Image (cartoon, rainbow over the protein chains, first blue to last red):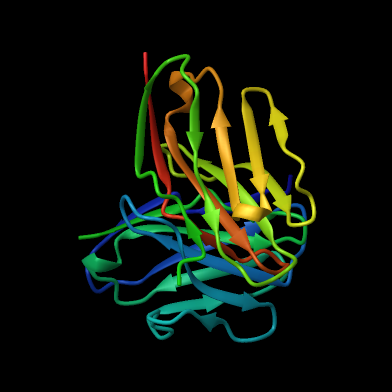
Length: 113
Length: 114
């Protein structure tokens, strides 16, 4: 299957700072990206969908000004959590939307202290 | 409305027992895709299977098997002769389109005791 590289794997940051998470496809190109969030002991919930060259579409309840998505190219997407707060502590995982399969990154565990 | 229901929150078994995880889905589309993923404590999602709505054949892969029944909107997953390494959270997911945007069930935590 396709390889998706997501980093960092984990990050601890201070409240009020911003954190950038990168998601890179290593062996294929795709126009569509999905970002999911998973709170402890909960399921994965879709945050946003982005297409290369256009603005991301955010799910209801997700603040677009807080979670900035940059779909820079067909192989790179970034999620920036701006002015992070402890309630943003979560597991973030990206997925490149394939037509035969969904390809997930390894995930990033964010802890805001 | 929740599209994927995994009614079992936690299952605990002794090694070598069989485990069946239930998944019930809801969709109005005639074309859709169903997935199962394993999430070990490290967090990454391990792809187990993808099934499209036109393929109702059951599938077996080693100790894993899947039973897809459109009549009951279910896509159940069985682990035969469970092992400690099978301990993880298992998610059932539904995609109603391509590229695949997934709606996940709540997950079932499987604990296999030696």
